[in-house]
Length: 311
Ligand code: 3HC
Image (tube, rainbow, N blue to C red; front, top):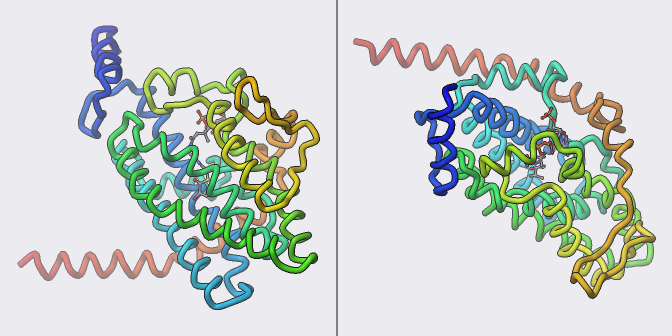
């Protein structure tokens, strides 16, 4: 692309203008948005699996109804995000094929198992809490369709986080066994939740460019720190302890200092060797195969309707 067009595009970004589908944009801007939005959509769809596992085992009708609503919301979030990605000239089929073939990434967090009911509380509290930290700035991302999808998604995420925290509160105020279950869930979900924000800024290959193009408004480390600062007091209020001996409040900065993250584990999960990677992809492949008849029927019905209105 000639330098003039790139410079004018950057001026638009610097002027806080929204980029819309029919606007000129650098090929690399288009590519990185397709990459990030499609992975975000895949995360929503795969994210339905760990929680879906507990819909039939929820401890009460109220908990079942809330979990059902949350999982259904996530399917809808995937829909908004695939639709936003399609405005960049990629088809839904291509994106789904990339996921099912293992070529596309989705959030590392969904490769961990949900072993007890307390995991559903920890996911709502920590995973949706982290997702909110990451998604609120994305409501101001420079690409219009992505920002608008985010505004709708963020409205539903706060309910997800609250119902998770309420589950944790109920367990922590329950029997010693229930509190121990909540502590066990925190022990297993805390560090993977910190990894959701991506590698350290020093090792992040996209952050600098994504900040320049205002796709990102904060870096990975900045959002991770915001999440820790907001979440540690909540955990202490629950009477739980964090699985990090180095965690301590720094009165100088007002931030919570935390220990080293195991980036080896992160790399293993991204390479497909997390606890549930294979199971998650198998579940999606099976769902796609079992859903083929629905797609065919919908296409046949649409063709029939087109024929009827053709005369
Ligand atoms: N899981 C999987 N892959 C990850 C990752 C994670 N937690 N963090 C980073 N990566 C990947 C990146 O995709 C990139 O690989 P790629 O070039 O093949 O795409 C590589 O690691 C380098 O990381 P970068 O930090 O340079 O990449 P990004 O600038 O894309 O930052 C990100 C990563 C912060 C996750 C960013 O992509 C982002 O904000 N994505 C949108 C938010 C999102 O996807 N959230 C998923 C949370 S779960 C969710 O939303 C569901 C909720 O309802 C619970």
